[in-house]
Structures are given as C-alpha cells and as structure tokens.
Length: 150
Ligand SMILES: [Cu+2]
Image (cartoon, rainbow, N blue to C red; front, side, top):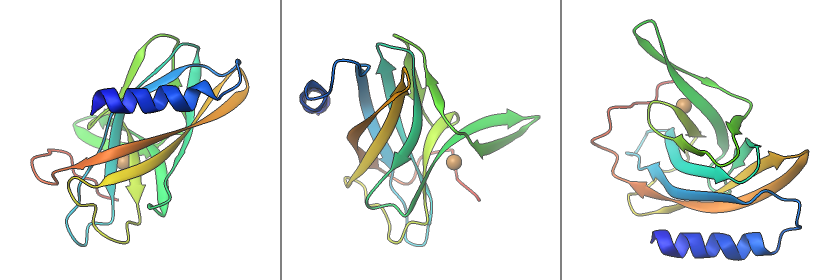
C-alpha cells in the first residue's frame, strides 16, 4: 500500500516544472464516521525538500475542508483553524490526532472504513504553488480518543 502510494506520487511529481519542491506525503488516512456524524479528521505525514507551507486542502467529496490545530489550553483541548502549516526543509511534519489535522466538515454521508477519500493539497514554496493529490484510507470510527465537536 505504502509503496503504491509513493510510486503514484513520484509519477505525478515528475510532470512538474523544476522549481517545485519535492513533497512526499505518506501514511494518509481519515477517520471513518458513524451515520449522523458531520465531521471527521484526516491525517498524514508530509516532507518537503525545500522550505514550504501547506496552505490549503480540498476534496471533491467533502463540502468543507479546513486545516486545524489542536492544542492544550490549560487542561482543555481546543482546536482552531490555521492558515497554513509550515513544512521546514527535510523535516517530516506529522498531521495526527491531537495536533495538526485536516478537518472534514459538513459531511453529507458517513465515511465507511476502507473507503478512499481523495484530497487535494496545496503546497507553496518560493512563492510558487503546487497541487498534490492523495487518497486517505478511512479507518475505524471507534477506538480513537479524539472527538471533534464544533
Ligand atoms: Cu478539527
């Protein structure tokens, strides 16, 4: 699975002009939802070979997608929307439960475990933008400590 994804990514990057940073996105997954649950999260690891920023995410199957950060505020876990996530050169940045995450909102139908959710990531480096398409595999709705309440 991982190998296939990496190969697909290389193919799509090969067509880009030379100025684009090489960005690899791995371990992409989303949390499956139960009926009536309008929000979920997507997670991944991103590494860029140039200083870059993740500035936007969209999906053809999710009405609204935001980039969020989750942080402890005193002893309460809070999340807020952020404009971008820094991708420092050569460092692997993890989007994971409890930290940065992609918020999938206004879901019209549940995301079933095993379903692939297409995501388009917009990455900026050196004033240039590139779009990276990935697919997040949905994993079981139960067993996660993090709940999203908006
Ligand atoms: Cu969130």
